[in-house]
Image 1 (spheres, rainbow, N blue to C red):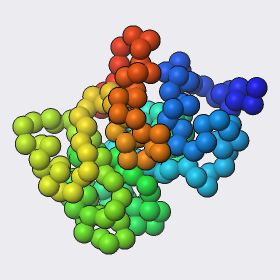
Image 2: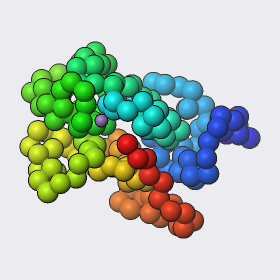
Image 3: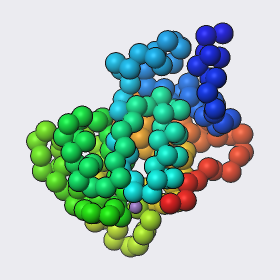
Image 4: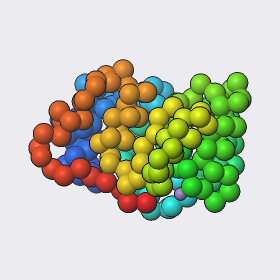
Length: 181
Ligand code: MN
């Protein structure tokens, strides 16, 4: 079948289970995967190279286009130049914090409508408030549970967004897949 050629690249079991539901275009049309015009684009801001690679691969496998930034200033520049559909924003970065980068983007009329999901390792009381005050639209903590990440991303970008979708799919009773960062 047509879909099998698309699946030829390395994938794991979970990604195959989830693809049809999360692909943001026409899930019945394998050709849609090669047509970039309708794919949603996510900027991943993460200074840990391995985490960046894992998040990138995960989102690409689930039908998203990605951009990558390793620090805050690069994230701002890439956002202004490319207008991604969503930003996954690490909070601890080598230059600006993710919160400062978020404030700058949310004060700019050209970029303020782009949803920003904060990703932070230091989940302390009050951190969520700080993230939301800076303008972040959602907040997830590390280690990132990939199903939760996908559900959050999906809630902003997918026309098929269904509350509780991933938990329905995840009934194979595998433990959640997490990314330590
Ligand atoms: Mn970091």
